[in-house]
Structure formats: C-alpha cells, structure tokens
Length: 516
Image (cartoon, rainbow, N blue to C red; front, side):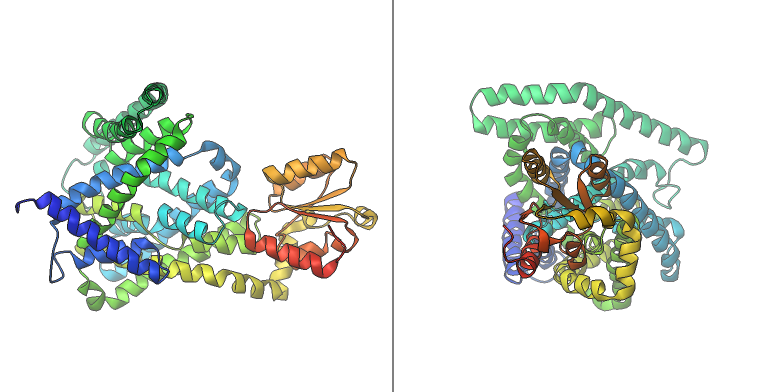
C-alpha cells in the first residue's frame, strides 16, 4: 500500500464524488448518478488518478452498515400497517414476477436459471434513497401515493435482508463456491436460520431495552459528541457482533440495531446524529461500486444493457402499476408508485457484491447491474415528469374512465336520494389526520359533510358511521363533479399532494365562485 493510502483514497473518492454529485445536481439528476460516475472516473478501468479499490471497499462496508442502520431507525411498523394491504402483496408479487421473468430470459444470454433467479432478485429491488429523494423533490413523500411507495420499498428491503441471510448457505446450489450439498446443505441452512432467529430474538428481547436505555443515559450527560459516538458504536458494534458471533451479515445486524432504536423517544435524534456520517460513508459505497465497473462494457454489450434496462423500467413500472390498480387504487396513484419503483440502487449493489464474492453471478452480472442502475436512476426523474400528462390523457380515454368507475363500484358515488339532498354542505378532500379532525369539528356544528378519500376502508368506515363519503382521486374532475361543489358553501383541502390540492382549488373556483 502506498504511503498515506487511506487518506489518499478518502480524499480522491470524496473529491471525485463531490464533483460528480455537483454536476449531476446541476443537470437535475440524483446525486447517486454523480457518485457512481465519480467511482468510474477514479477506478482502475479508466486512465488518470486512481483510488485504492481495496481500501475503498473496506470503507464502503461502513457505508452499508450505516445505510442499513438508517433504514432500521426509520422503519415504522405503524406506517407499514397503514398501507400493508397494498405494500406487502404488491412488493412480494413484484419481486416474484420480476425474478421469474428474469430467470426465463437470461438463458438467452448463456446464463443458468439459478443465475437468473439471483440476478432477478438484484434488479427487483428499488433504491430507497432514490425513491425518498425523488418523492421529496416532487412534494409527494407525505401523500397517500408516497406512503404506499415507501411502504412498498420497505417490504422490498426486508425481503432483501432475508435473501442476504440465505445466500451463503445456498451458494453451492446456485452455482457458487463449492460447499455442502444434499443433507449437509439442509443442515447448514437450518443452522443459519437458527442463528438468525436467535440473534433476532436477542435483539427484540434485550436490544430493544438495553440500547435505548444506554442512549438515554448518554443523552442525560448533555454531551452531543458522546451521543453521536454512542450511536456509531451501537451501529458498528451490533453489526460486528452479528457477523462474528452469529455469522449473520453486517447489513442485517445494522438493520436490527436501527429497529431496536426506532420505537424509542431518541430515534429521531439518533438518526440525526448518524445522518452526516451515514451520508459520507454511503457516498464512499457508491464510489466503490463505480470503481468496480468497466465503462467499456456498455460499448461491448449495448444490446444486453438495453435489455436489462427495459426489464427494470418497463416491467417494474407495468407490474407495479398493474398490482396497485388491481388492488383498487386510482390510476394516478398506480402511475406514481410504478414510476417511483422503476429503478435500482443501493441494495441491488449490495446483493450483486455478495453474489460476486460467492461466485454465483458471472463477471458481466456486476457490470450489468451498475450500468442499469446509472441509466434507470437517471431516467427516473424523466418518468416522474411524464406522470401528470400521462394520467390526464388516460383519464380522457372512455374505456379507462369506464374501467375506473366499474372498479370503484358503489363507493365512487353517493346514493341518489342522499346526493339530491346535499345543500349548503362542506366538502373535505382527504381524510388523514387533519381531514378527520376537520370532519369531526364540522359535524359538531351540525354541518353536512361530504368526504373524498382514496382509501376504500376509510370510505366504508365513514359510511357505516353515517357520514357522506365517496371514493376516488380528488384531483379527478369526474370525482369532484360527484361532490356537488356548485351547491357547497365550504371546501377544505386536507391533501398532502400539492399538485392535486391545486387542481381541487382551481376546479372549485370554476364551479362555485362563492364557496369558502
């Protein structure tokens, strides 16, 4: 190793990442694209200044640990429960379909079905970082669409954690490094699952009590740097114990450490303290991934790269949107969720790196995933820009409108007698935390209220309670027509989607100039 190799590698990697991220931001692309490009620029496959790939890889491990720790800290069972009926079956269904389709396609490339399964899993997982950043940029993170997409990707993250646990003992069957087979494989798999279960039980029974208590004691000292240090020790320490004592992946250990903190009062502070270091080391992770990519691969295999990008973007958008539609959600919600998931990122890299170390994927598999990630992340912002015009055009298609109405059924309109009696009523668009409070306040004033909401269960509960309610996207003119805004005296918009809120207000002003 060259003198000051560690410092030199960090300086080169972070400097290149800064330049790459800055250029990407100027072109309104996700910074991850810039970080990956920076890794390619300072990697061994390109001329000029190069960082040490071995050192960068070690530093990237810290990035993986802190990334998974952050996912665990932000993991909320309550948020997942709220969208579980679409997120859980949707994510699992999409992963199964994606993996099956890929496994059937890859023999055309000369790969085995087993390699296709592993590769399919890698390109079935969307980037949590990219999704949250994109939803934040377009103001949809706290919307109903955003919550479904985030819940969906959390389920995908949990699925990939399980896959990371099972891969090492299954590697011999999947064509990886030589190892146990037959009865020995069953024993190895059982032992691995037993160790994971034991570690999980210990983290739930002991970790959820000890770790928050420890952080609370440190917080009472009033020394912020000690709290930051404690958070890092917990994240890295639990990950290392998981790896060396239980032979569980560093990623799973870090994730469970975050989950142990997530339900405590200090979870937000812990996330805030770990965030700067997490971001810095996560950058090194993306740079190290880029360093492993040979850019000439795209020139050598353009059709293969195009096929994988199509598998990711077209298939994931169509499958995810189709599942959301089938589960009864509006077209716009389906398009937003589908577009948000039509990319791959950090966990695809983690999985492909594990596959590479185990000898499961062929050499070009890793290059394919990196090339596809760079392209799909870049295309993702373009997909989001196309959602609104596409949704509007689809709404104008008579067949689509009829399908939407038929799927919504009786919940999409009021009974004729009740609709005719609506006079001087209040329309509440959205029945989340704010919308429900407004509805109750208006009812206490003996005011007739009509609620518009996209959650079927909420609509059914409101109707059972005697409240007038219709199911649908409040941004859709046809839905708003059924609220009889022309006879209403008050409109309350309690939506978290600014674009939909604006459309509702504009429609109301055109329909009833006197509405409050």
